[in-house]
Image 1 (spheres, rainbow, N blue to C red):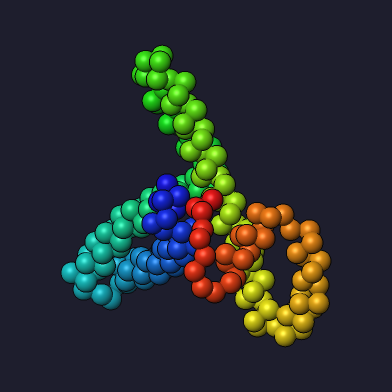
Image 2 (cartoon, helix red, strand yellow):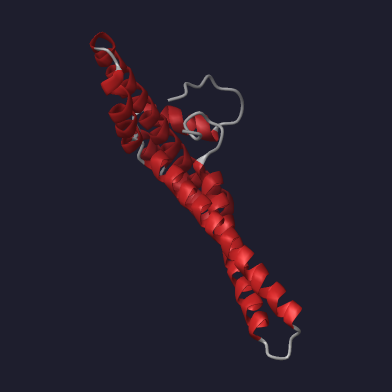
Length: 179
């Protein structure tokens, strides 16, 4: 839902999840090091106990971090396929609504889901256009081949696809619809 409202995009969430997984790897290595310290025979008892205690605390933090990563994965999956979220909402809310409100609420929800899906598809199409632009900026050969065949691409594009590409690659202000 955060991504639908525009607060955060999917790439930011994926980057955050990847960063959390990197932190998890580092914490696991630190737990292993602390466990090994706790088992060293020549170490003072206070240091061994402190190492064991720190390892236990880090394991608890790892559990919290795993729960956070799982939550991020669920949010990312819900953005990629919002239908299960809608099913959960309808299962919870619709039975408690009186009959005159039930049908309009279901129709409004379906409309909202269709708009969310359209926005998702627009973002996907826009990312393809941005990817082509980035590739042509980095690769002169790609740019020349793409420029030679640009008329072919434009010939098969639908008006909506043309509008999305123009919005994403042309500089300056354009009137844009959210979907």
